[in-house]
Length: 315
Ligand SMILES: [Zn+2]
Image (cartoon, rainbow, N blue to C red; front, side):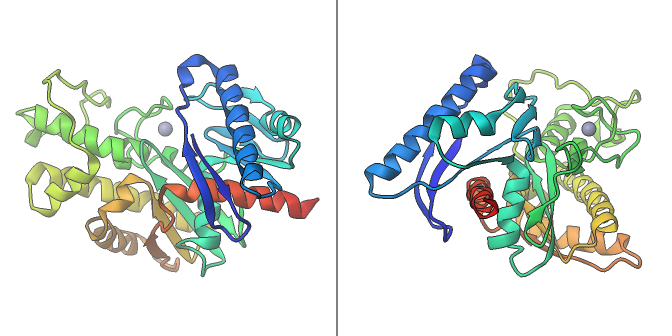
């Protein structure tokens, strides 16, 4: 959990991190969230500040209008009325949002997309998720599940995704996928003759070689140095990502696409080939500006603060 006291002008006054310990179950995690938020408000007061609003953002499916954490695979939330629980505990107006949408909101308003009215923020890490922000507001979807760009189909015969379907974008182009695919290829001596996946479409189980897995950033560096397998994995990721972004641009027609998460730190090694591959795929659509996120891992906290301030304005 990344937590912060943030001034209305966006300056982070104080930041803390706490382990989520999701294994304890959803109730215990909720208890920790409330205790940490309460502690932060207390610290603010002790420092002579006046806490005015609370913003909480969580992963998964989030019903922002009702303030309910509907579903989250990794934290175990099922219909948790987190907004009401928090506002009852702290006595502050509270907003509940979605982690990636909040990060996208922050990037669009005060980060890399701040000069654009229409922004698509794409976070590439363990998975891939997106936020479509128009005029400073991130679309939530009818069920709180908008922005699942990682689960659009890009390779029908590709590896099976965590969602159960084959060939989703994040099975090829997430930072985890890049690391995993490179590990598979380098573990298998026949690898240079293999297609994208095993014949049944599933990604092969990794043989237990006892080696530590090379990260996506390292794969990018090895590709830049001309290593053959790294180049192949990286090129496939870039191509798949370009397919996904072209779909995003066809749907949303944005001025700026902001890439965040671990993979975006690859810099020119990602952005140069990705820009070219995206340009290849666009016909009548206008080419968006493709830029790296500017707020780093503070984006989620800043987005939560922005949602909290928005909540105040609505009152
Ligand atoms: Zn999927």
